[in-house]
Amino acid sequence: MRKPIDTLSGVEVNGEFERFDQRNEIYCRSIWDDEVRSAKAEAFFDGYYMPNAKARKTDGFGLKDYALRNAAWHVSNVIRDIEVAGSFRPTATQPPRKEGFWDCYTSHDEGWPEPLPVDDPADTTRELKRVARFFGAGDVGICAFDERWMYSRAYARDTGDGVDSKPQEIPEDLRHAIVVAQPMDADLIRTVPSALSGAATGLGYTHDSIVVILLAQYIRNLGYRAYASLNDSALGIPLGLQAGLGEVGRNGLLIHPEFGPRFRIGKVFTDLPLVDDKPANFGVADFCAQCDRCARACPPQALPYDAPSPHRHSKSNIAGVVKWTPNAEKCFGFWANQNTDCIICVRACPYNRDFSKRRHRAWRRLAATPLRRLALWLDDVFSDRARKRVLWWWQQH
Image (tube, rainbow, N blue to C red):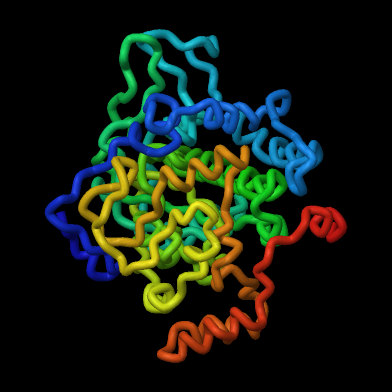
């Protein structure tokens, strides 16, 4: 299953590789798998709808904090819970859709009937990226369609007849994946763990969903096929890696050269003729081999301290890929106990900094050299990565 792109991206795929079935993703397992399913997991998901939020007196988990978090998620939730066959009620033959999470988006008008001729794919690529940024994308990269990272089957919530998966909706004769990076608010992330910090995640998803839906509609208006996607349909991190949006860090996340690990990933799959980007290399893998700050900061100790390996903690990890792999059960268990999502690993990451400032760009260059241990020491000494109380955030704005 190895491809030439793997040499450029640094991905090692071995003979044990199997495409990932979405039903084994940890959030899907929390619905059907007794090993993960629990009352706390159910309350975690229900809490994203305000009447069910578990507001309490703990710092970061008050009513205002949940109010902001759930408001930030609201548009994404409205788009996600699409009406099916004139009713929100699922049937045995039509399980409920969760567009952007279990299913690709279908919120599109009919496009142009004939494809616009493309004389120069490089010009089309430049224009497409201009359009993506106009719609609000923080960054955008393009890679060849790679069926290895598409889910082998999509998750379908059991409707009573035992169905928990369904065929993948994205055709496999497409040419490209357009990968969108949507940055998240840096100040909110300084309050992790908190319900308040979840607003950064929610707004990231909301903006991302708007961008990919609009971008797919633009491509359809040119007469080509396009399918907008967030967490559904495919693994975003390997596609973002191949599209040049960053390198994979110890925390299992993609590290962007401008946003660090502080961003969401969206995709549009299309047959529009485009030019692929090349994978980025700015020293993240070598730096993370020396740095363990995310692993040390993780309360449930869900992140690895050792070198990248093909080890799988459970069926929630893809088989046959050598990488740093988080323990999904430990991670999600902490989320459920906290009653909100957690990105402490993002807050603790030395790449989580404002690269618009000269001193941080200088640090990034240093981190890519054999003096990376010095860069790590400088981050330890001069960066404040401790959690901020939420009052700090409310007073900043």
